[in-house]
Length: 107
Image (tube, rainbow, N blue to C red; front, top):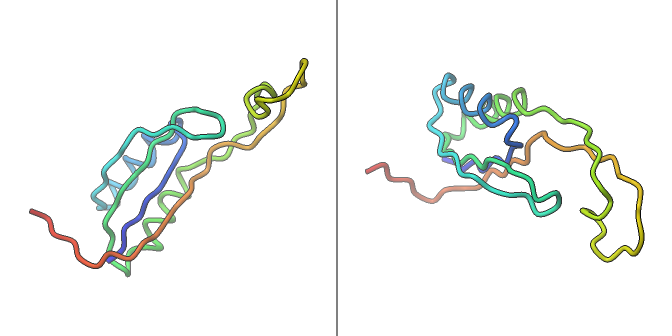
């Protein structure tokens, strides 16, 4: 068994949550905040059997869209002096960690 930790943009959280549930996965969703843009994310925790890892990751991937966003430069360079032009960054998608679980008990 594995623990999947998936961090997705809040814009995609509902679609990811619904799709994982429809696919038969038990999911715990936590609110989280990214350290770079300081925007809202959702972190999903899932205990998944080894044979279902690829299927779960595919569900997450297909429901997590990347987007291009313009951000003020002062969000990325806190020490910059003077006005800086906005930067274009890619946001969204998903960051997925798959960890080994020594034991899982559902009580």
